[in-house]
Image (tube, rainbow, N blue to C red; front, side):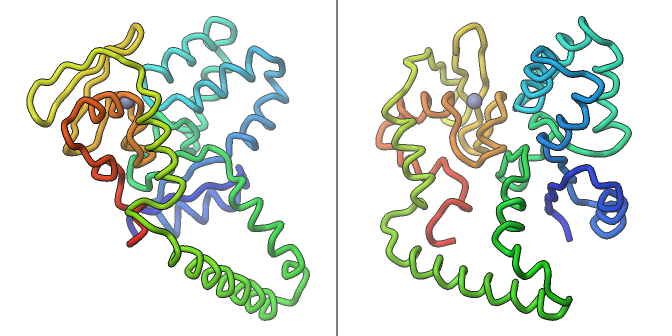
Length: 240
Ligand SMILES: [Zn+2]
């Protein structure tokens, strides 16, 4: 199975199992769990801020800046944090995530919610447990299907709200076009390069989330008769 992303806590058994069963999977580790372990050795506000900044960094430039800041205070902390990825194979910073799954989650709240939702079933014998979960998922999917049937337009509500908000709050940054496809945007002290066909930006947010970043928003905003949904990944289309 290719193009699969798994997020878990740092449970050691899972690490081996994922490597064995899904060798091509991107195995992310929940930052909340990672931080909980990390702060036992490196407590305090400074470490918390820098470690979370490194996790939220969408690209290597921002990631390296956070790691460099960490290194000025504690070389060991920086080495240990980076080893989570290089030695243990856990993806924990967005800058290291592949853009395949269009999801930039760094915490596994999703599975925690799921666990809470199926809490009763968890105390049942194995066959009943699986059956209870199956029933709950079947009913939920039917609920969602009926809900989605009422949606109008092209994009699902979350993506629709996002692009409307983005289009209303453009930053007025300077946009330069190379051709119909390539553009660059001067944003504060940085410059980002965009490929409007491949839907990529050097900030990497666009390709990671599937939703245009603020830089892409600037370029789309300057286009004549642009349809915003054309710059959103198809996974956000109602038809999907
Ligand atoms: Zn961008």
